[in-house]
Image 1: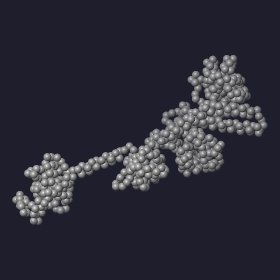
Image 2 (image 1 turned 135 degrees about the vertical axis):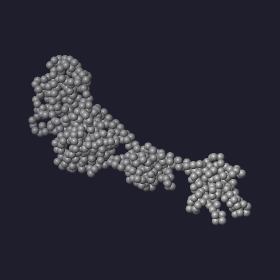
Image 3 (image 1 turned 90 degrees about the vertical axis):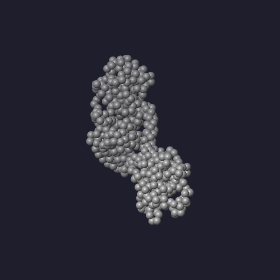
Image 4 (image 1 turned 45 degrees about the horizontal axis):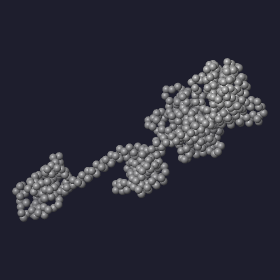
Length: 631
């Protein structure tokens, strides 16, 4: 073989002439024999691999790292043995000083007189290109890693039809859809209002980027997603696309809405507290006088007018109570209530209120589940929703009230509150009315907001429902399902005392035997009417219109007084101060405090006293007095 190699390279042979031509080539060219010995290399070959002009060329194995030798030698054998083996390939090479480089080799067999004697390789240094490819690959991997692991949702879409081209896992989680569902979908199909989005898209195309643009998309379950987006124009797979980074601000937006609503409610509460006292005093005077006149008037038409006056006065008192309910804190005396029992107890008197043209269907199905609440508040909640539904249906249609159980393993956002995981009773009130338009739905829980005409409502019904549910710790969803559907989520109570559903107080008997009362109230008309009614009921009544007169009467008649009936806010002092002094002087004296304000609790030293809120009926007042005197 050595003799053959010498023969093929002696002067005048065709191979020598070829070698003279390629000696000056820019690319490295090398020739090896069938045994892997490098028998010739041009100047570029020696420069590429760091060989001196007189340095032996060695073998193929000398030009590759140890770990790559087997692969290179196998390619060499394959190329020698047949033309079907790849003609070009890249591999990691080794210079004579041990440094590494990447080369691309194009290899062809060397044939002499029909006999394959070795291979000739044209070798090009591709280290720089390979390094750039590697860097690009690493950058792409890093980009993909950031893309896949980003906390915010990332959506890549084409600008014309907003067709989704790619999404990251957070986007799938945000929309509640798998990647294959989102890719190919148009964002226009899940956008609440496409017009602002298209305007923002035009700004992105004009400027190249846009920041903090807000839009509203829909989750798979139909709920709204408030998104804060930043978008840029990018090149994606050879075409222009939009990369949108979307941050879910739904909870923040809802918290802002709740804060705004809470501020409104607080304002209403302050307004109610300021107005209620005077208004309730006026109502109490009107109702007390009307009741007193009713005792003395026998003429039917006059009695009818007095009864109408009483009815309208009680309607005004109900409006005041709804106002006050917006500002009251949770009642510490609440206990366990079964919503199903409340619904069944209400059915007897709720149906007549709805009218003959409204069919009511009850479907309680919570099997004894209980919530911690006040039964009266639950009654108020259901009454307000039912009357609201009746008005929406135009006094004709069907109202369906149902309950069901729900267990949440993950938090759920409702229209009003974010529900924590746990068990809930879902109270559903559905009607067959026209439903609720979106602009109205966004405001229905605001105090005083109403779609009714002047004189047809106060706009407090749903605001009261909101307040009651807020105190209980639940939430409300509002949907259109062939009509309006209110879903009220009430957290299930565990291990607390069960409260009985309130029942009407039985008929009032005559007042107990003779008793002496001291009545102190600065409202002269009211005090006079109360005194007249109490005297008619058999009581002896001492009357004072200010704290100073009340103190004097206590000093003069304290030993024979059975009960002190006093207002709270009066000229010259407080009814609480007067009551404290009276109890300190006569511990056995009973005390009944009345006020136009909501019951905010009595002072500790008056824990044995009782409270009645103005306006009240004579029957209510006599009942409270009897309860106190019978202790």
